[in-house]
Every structure is written in structure tokens, then in C-alpha cells.
Image (cartoon, rainbow, N blue to C red; front, side, top):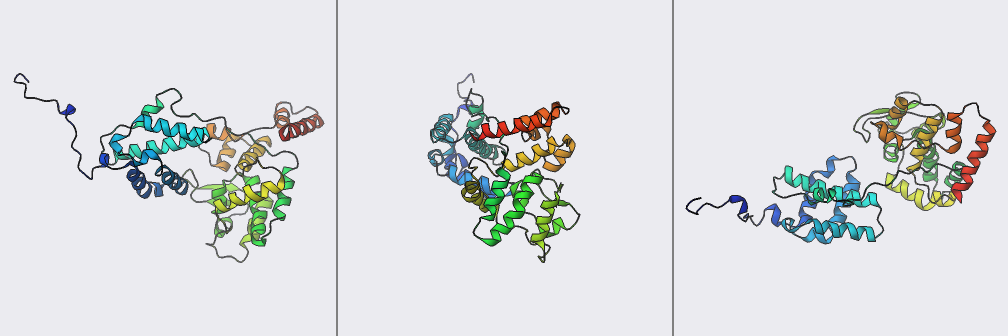
Length: 325
């Protein structure tokens, strides 16, 4: 240092080879992550589609070492201008962050995670909005059942007759429901055992009488390892969005709202938290609470069990009318 010959190596420009990760477009990192990491996840199909979408963005064409926080600020703002929901934008940025963390920790790439820096800024990453509290209004359950009877394809109609009460009575996730195999419901009366649920563990789901009967009807004469439902979750969602709920006149009702409805009804009947968590598969009370949305009538009935039940009925009708308006 006295002679002036020593140079701080931290200040030396890094010599990356032509095939080094920092010299590659970020799109290659997205593709590598999609092929090596994504298949191990529960929501692999959804994340794979998102990564393909991200690979078409302008920032994905840049070299990894040239990307800055500003690139992802531009991406965030463009998604916001395209009227994407805060939760969608948040999920996009979290996925990008996961790719960076994979590069840093799995591939030993000497880079910083720009999304981590973005999170430190106020409103840098959109925060999740309040959870949905949509419940079925008076007459909607009957209208949906009638819409299912109006489906044009008989096998689809027959399967939806079983799927709708299954979702509405048990609170199962759609993906879990369409994954059921015939053998799963033949093991124990009134239950279906999901061997590998979303949270990574098996669980027993209690079935209502009508849900159990509907499943048994579909499994009659079928091999033990065959699927009860012959369509995928995506096909089911498409039928729900574009046909069933339109016919029923409840276009704002999502199929996942049936899970909210089922668990809220169970809570209104007095089910304790432990039982509800076993049924729903939630591992924390905080997440479960997002699904328990009592109507004004249910709230009053639980708080004042000796109150006039007719008044609660009238209050529930008022809630239904106000919700439709």
C-alpha cells in the first residue's frame, strides 16, 4: 500500500465469462427456474404460466447484471396501468424475487435482489387488499342448481350435480375436489381422504350426506384409481364463469367463494376452530379467519341466541336485497 501497488479487489471490475449468469438475459434465468424449481411446487401450472408471461416482458430481455430496481418499478407501474389487481402485481414481483434468490443462493451469482430493495420503499410492492367476504344471497343456491340442470352436455351436467354440493357443503378447494379418486371415498363412510393437500399433508374431509351420495353415484362401476370428475380445475372454472353463474344471475360470484360460504355456514352452526381447521386444511387461525364471514343475521343469532328468530330472518333478507342492489 505504501508503494501504491495494492488495489482493493472489491473495486476491480468483475470479469464474467461469456456464459456466466450475469451476462445472460434474465429470460434465461426465468426459463431455468421454471424447468428446475417450479415442477416441485403445488401450484406448478400457475407459476409456470406466470414465468412464461414474465419472460415476454421488456426487462427479461436485459442482461441480469444490467437490471436495476427502476426496471421493475416500470414493470409494476405498467401492470397497474393495465388494471391488474394489487395481489396479481404482488405475486408477479414475489415470483421475480424468488428467481433472484435462486440465482443468489443456488447458483452463487454475485448480484443483489432488486425486489428486496423495492420492498423497503413505501408502496414499493402493492400490499394485499382486504379479503373477500362474498356470501350467497337468498335464492342463489337454488338458481345455481337450476343453471346446472340447464347445462347442455349430459356428462358435464351429471358431474356438476355432484361437484356443486361437494364444494358448498365441505369447503374443499376446487383443485382438491377434481383430484379425488374413486378409492378415496370408499375407505370410510362420510369422509374423503386427501392424501396430499395444498398444505403438504393428508387430511380427512367430512362430507354431507348429499355430497357423499353424489360422489358415490359417480364412482359406481368405476375402477378404484380413476378420477371421480373427468374435467380439470381450469375447465370447471371456465364452465362456472361463462355459463353457470351467468345463467344463475350471480356474475360476481367466484367458484372459490363457495369455500368461504361452506366454512362460514359451519361456523354459524357452532363448529369450533380446531374442527374447522381440520376440515379446511388451514394451518393457522389467521388464514382461516379470512374465510369466516358471518352475515348480519348469523352475527346477531350468535351474539343474542334468545333474540326473536323472525327478526333475524328479516335482517337476512335485508342483507340479501342490499347485496344485490
